Picture 1 (cartoon, rainbow over the protein chains, first blue to last red):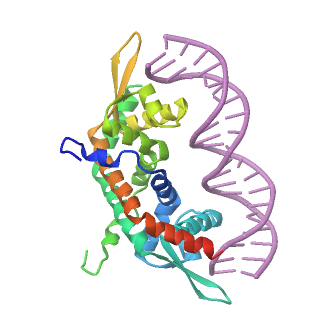
Picture 2: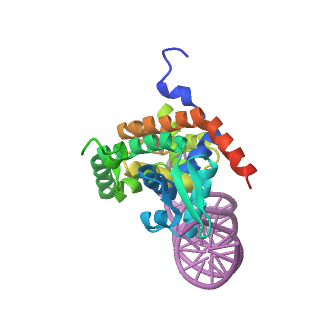
Length: 124
Length: 124
DNA sequence: CTGTATCCTACAAGATACTG
DNA sequence: CAGTATCTTGTAGGATACAG
C-alpha cells in the first residue's frame, strides 16, 4: 500500500460474512441485552424486566443468536426449578467497547445532527 | 464517580434519541452507502450500481434519512438533465471511522465467532 | 422459572410503472 | 438522470397459550 492511498482503501469491499455478523449483533435488542449483561450477569426474567419492553420470544431469539455467535455465555445454575444465568463473554466485552464508542459519538454529535434535521425539515 | 465504578457505569441508560440515531444510521443499506461515499462522491445511479442490489426505493429512503441526519450532502450539479451528487459530510466521516473499527473487529474475531458457532451447532 | 408453539399483524422492502 | 407512486409480498416481532 502506497502513501497515496486513503485510510479507507484498506477496507474496500468488506466481506459479506463480516457485514452479516454485525447485522446479527448490532440489532436493537442485542444492543440492549449486551448493555445490561455488561453490567452484571442476569437470569432470563431479570433480563426481561431490565430491558423494557421486550417480549419473551424476542428475548429468546436474541439470546440464542448472541450465544451462537459467542457474545454471551448461557450458564445453567440448577434444575428443579430451572435457573439459567446469562453472562457477557470475553468476545462480547470487546465489541461492547466499540458500541460504547458509538454511544459516545451520538452524545458528542447529537447537537449537530439536530441542526441538520431542522435545516432539512425547514427546506421542505 | 468513585473509583469502584466500572467503566461501563458512565453509560448506563443510554438516551433513547441516541439509540434511535444509531438505528437510523447503522442499518444495512446505510452502512453500504456510507462505505461507498467515503471513497468518492457518487451520483444516484452510480451509487445504485455500486451497491448491489439495492432498489431505487430503498436507496432513496436511505439517502434521504442520511441527508436529514447530516451524514451525507446532496449537491445538485445542473439541471436539464438533472445531475445530483451525494457526498459524505464531515459528520459522516466521523462515524465511518467507528464503523471501520467494527469491520476491523469482525475481521480480528471472525475465527473465534466461527468456533463458537460450531460449538453451538454441535450441541443441538 | 425458562422457555416452545401458534397465530397474527404491521411495517420494511421488492416489483413495476410512470414523471419532470 | 433522478426520482415518485402504487401495489404486493416477506418477515420480524407481538399476543397468547402451554410445557418441562
